[in-house]
Amino acid sequence: MEAYLLDWANLLLRWLHVIVAIAWIGSSFYFVFLDSNLLAPTAEDLKDKGVDGAMWAVHGGGFYHPQKYMVAPKGGIDSKLHWFYWESYSTWLSGFALFAVLYLWNASAFLIDKQVLDWSPVAAGFTAVGLLAAFWFIYDAICRVFGFRPHGERIVAALLLGVVALACWLATHLFSGRAAFLIVGAMLATAMSANVFFWIIPGQRKVVAAMTSGRPYDADALAIHGKRGKQRSVHNTYFTLPVLIAMISNHYGFLTSHPQRWLVLFLLMLAGALIRQFFVQRHGWHLGRARHPWPYAALGVALLLGLVAWLRPAPAPAAAALQAQVGYAELKPVIEQRCQSCHGAAVQMKNLRLDSQALLEQHAQMVYQQVVVTKIMPLSNATQMTDAERALVARWFEGQGAAK
Image 1 (cartoon, rainbow, N blue to C red):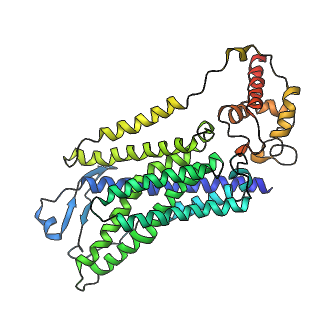
Image 2: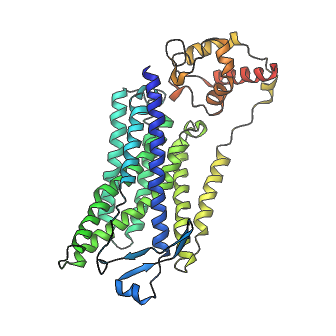
Image 3: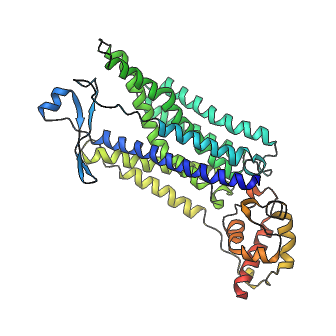
C-alpha cells in the first residue's frame, strides 16, 4: 500500500510541477521578448505619462499595448499591481516535494549506485540537499563580487561554466547517473527561485514602495535594486533550457550510464544555454540592436550532433544473431536475482510483478525497453545486473518475437 500511495504522490506532484513550471518559464520567456521588443514611444500622450517603451501586439482577437515605465507612472497605478513570483515559488516547492518523495524517501534505490559510491541513504540525502544550497551560495557570491565590475557578466559567465562543470563531475561521482543529472538541474533551478525570493522581489518591493509613496526618493539609490533584479532575471532566462535538459535527460539510460556522463551532462546544458542565447539575441537582431545570433544556434546544434555521434551504440557482433534462443528457464534465475526484489510477490513497485513466466511475457516489451534499451532498470543498478545478463534478456525478448 505504501508503494501504491507513493506512486500517486509521484504522479500528482509531477503533474503540479510541470504545470507551474510551464507558467514560470512561459512568463520568463514572455518578459524577455517584451523587453527586447519595446520601442521608445512617439505619441505625445505616452511621453507625457513617462512611458519608457511600448509595443503593439495582437492575440486572441484583440489588440494589446504593453508599456514599460522606469519611474513611477504619472497619475499613479489605477488597477491591481500583479506580482510575478508565485510561479517561481510553486515550481521550486513542488519540485522539491517530488524530489523528496521519489529520491530522498527511496535514497537507497534512487540516489545511490554502489558501483559509484557505497554510502548510507542518510548521508546521500543530506549531501544532495546540501549541494542545492551550496550552488546557490557560490553563484550568489560570484554575482556579488564580479557582477558589476567592467566586463562583469563575462567574468560571471566564465566562472559559472567552471562551477557547473565541477558540479556535473562531482554529482556523477557521488550519486547514481539518473540522480546526478536531476540534482545538477535542481541546483540551477534552486538558484533561479532563490534569485526571485532573495533579490528580485524584495528589490522590486522597495522600488515600488518608494515610487508610490508620494514622497521624494533618491532614484540613484534605488537604481541598484533595478540593476540587480535585471541581472538575476537575465541569469534565470539563461538557466531555463539547461535546467530542462538536465531534468528530462535523466530518463535516458544511454546518457546517465555513460562512463563520461559528467561531460555528457555538461555539454547538453551548454548546448541549451547557447540555444537560449540565440533566441534572446534574435529579438534584438530583428530591431537592428544586435548582430545575427546564428553562431550561437549553430554551436548549440553542433554540440548536440557531436553528442549523437559520440554516444552512438556500437554495432552488435554478427555472431550474436547466430546464438541459440533463450528460454524462460534460462532467464528465470536472472529475473529472480535482479528484478523480483522490487517486482515480485512481496513488493510490486509500479504495480508490476515479474515472478512468473506468464507475467514476464505479458510485460516483455516494457522489460526489454527498461533493461536493455535504456538500461534504467534495475534502478541505479541496485541489484548489480551485468551486461551479459542484459544481453540474455535481449536474446530472450528477440526469441519471443521469433516465436510469434
